Length: 546
Ligand code: NGO
Image 1: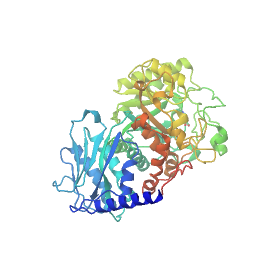
Image 2 (image 1 turned 90 degrees about the vertical axis):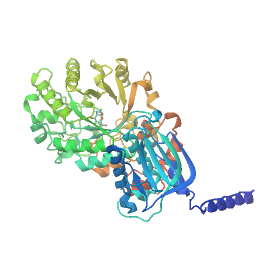
Image 3 (image 1 turned 180 degrees about the vertical axis):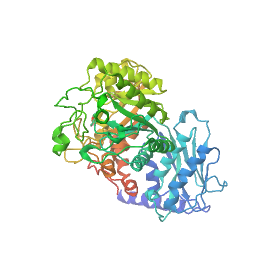
Image 4 (image 1 turned 90 degrees about the horizontal axis):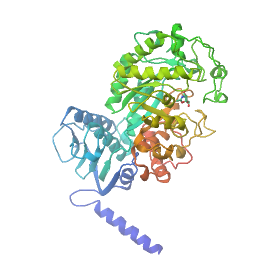
């Protein structure tokens, strides 16, 4: 028996060796290239290997000259491949034998706006899509088919092999996002751009920026300059904070657009508003502060006294309590303020949505809360945008034009669905990237759960909340709150490996997903993350191939 197996093995080796030496010079794909082909994240709709291989060489050209956007996709691809290969990779060149061809055919309806078909032959790699967004997604897949060192920014030794075959691919949900809280800790424009690159690598297409909270106001509003001057001057722990000028915000938005990501800006109201109250005394309702703020943050988690400090009305706050601040529904200046903010924000936001927060307004009277949500909705509409808010906004008069972001209460999620609103799924127990992995990991909170890589992956939006079906769900979004996350190293540690899993939940059909199979694929990403200098959490549940 053993002998038979050995014999079969040697004859297979012989066949592959011969296949590798055919007279026309074609080569069969190496095991590494085949493995890369079979381990793409998010998992494609279908992937069939052909046995052959394509090699990027100094002869390879990128053909992408049918329109400006296709050309831009070609330039983007070339910029990704040039540093490590050291090849020229001219874009839009002659159709020579060795080409990577990008094209918008518009003929395959099943691929939709974001899907693509990637064919790797011996002489040509072809990515076909209906829209440039599909080409972009196909390029992300192509990156994962190449040896990991393609991600290095200095010249590496080849060969640059891609296993032959065909991948057909399109997403399950239209909205696949992540939120970055730049209010609790500020992140620079460069940091946000890196985050955009990391999320779009896994085909995420929405970046939600949490631009204001009790601890900081991060977007320049020209008609209310103190918001950033005062409200932007600190952050959790008392650091110097920061903010984006409108020009910097536009730069982020444009960068995201170039990666086919839509930016959704959030101004959190009527609660989580202390930074604005500290900037403008006239906005203060003069309410007594609820001393035991409660909320989800477990005070035992706050390491220093400072983080647990009680907020003082009208003063900057650098702790991590929640649910203590509110705007006043009785003051007309409140609505002038909100309208100015939303107008300026709408003017610099090309995406269709403005996020008005709406969470944890624990010291806002219920009747006032409803007035707020209804008036916010009208203002957002008047500025030509659609409203999105956290699940609590289900209490207001909402309809099918509104998106409700479910995070903690199934009751509110169902209420929203009953009112005809669409739901964006961010269940804290599954996709809150700020939750600790387990009780021993230092960063993060754990009020919702400890979320290991498996738990974060094993769930299905379509069956997660009883009474809410897939048709009512626009997609998934993984928020990264930053009470305990102060820099990019912290961020990457919390985000990897969970973010790729959430990206896959949004992209790949649930029937084709299993943790056992996925954990092998994600384990193989480690080398890529190393080359990309991503600091990830080496979950003991995953066998990392390093
Ligand atoms: C809650 C709260 C945030 C906290 C976060 C911490 C929502 C929607 N509001 O989620 O202010 O930062 O938990 O996990």
